[in-house]
Length: 485
Image 1: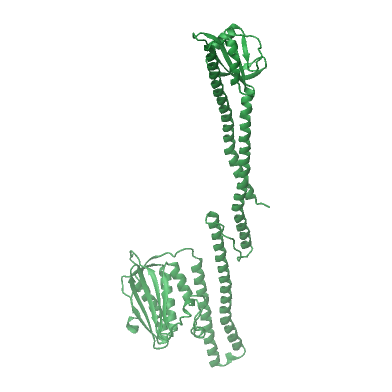
Image 2: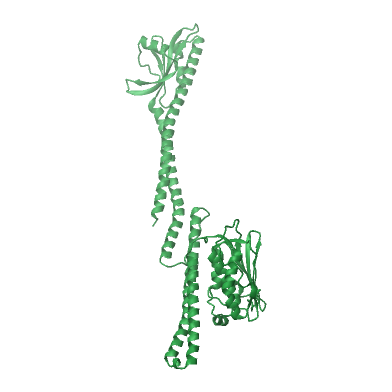
């Protein structure tokens, strides 16, 4: 069954064709009638002039008008044309059929002689018909008028010829309309069918089936719509798969600390609370697991907030040195406990276009990972410099490094290179994923250069600020310079 859109398009093509062809057909029909009348008029004039010339030539050779009159009959065309020759008194000397049919009055003959030598359409009262008629005066050798020659053609013959041509035009118009209808139906089907397929695909998407795709019929607007719909379905399918994987990962990540907390609580209730040393150990483990759970929830909320924000982050000029020093100050105690040296090379006067809290969060995540995965006695360094229109914040460590095969996946959610160590140090597996989301939201990028056994360097690339505003005063000092540089 053809779609309603296809019928509408076909009807539109047909209507446009009729509106264009109907005036053209009427004009051609009218023009054919006028052209046929003009052609008959010209033919009649030629025959009249020829008949007069023949009769005057015969009279010039000594013949009488009555004897010469039959010569004019040779010029009567078959199919109804009549030639009549009359003398000066109006008496009919000869007619196309050869049978004299009486006389006309002298006044009538005089009018024929004086009349304009052209042709006209007149009414034949005797037969109640119209005819195209023309008259010429016949002159003798001395120049005097001796009679008239009259040729007439019934208008029914002229109109009959015109009607035959009009029939041909009518058939051509009808054939054109039929052809336009056929072509319009094919074109309409070509347009409506892809749209119908896309409509069916949209219904399947609304029902939860994202695997279906429609063919891209062409490079026009319909093809672009089909390609966009396919891309949308692909994106939704990927997002749905990512959401399912994310929910599964979150469930797994939440299940582990919750199970640990439950086991520790059960052990305490079972009697471990009566042993001070064992109770203290279990309470310490409970605190560690609750911190881990709290960090996981915090990271989940942060990454959800980043994804919920449409478009770019609200960027402003940020004093990079001050931001990095604040983050290093916050992590100085953690580095001291881990026995890791923390060094900075952050010159003043560098400004990046970024969201200030997000910039600090990205730096904090990288420093947190570097401290966690650097062994005791190792070094974590932060370097800030400008390269063209970009500000680069480099965080390097002397940790275990990342195998090259693992590098492409380190920014995935919940992905850990060393799962056992990550759980030991309390990592959630979301830190680098949050860094990547932050950099994309701020129009920047994050890169990594790692060598197994020698350490890694992560680089945050922010657009440089073209103008810096005065930032509010704060703790813009270097709180770790004395003990860690």
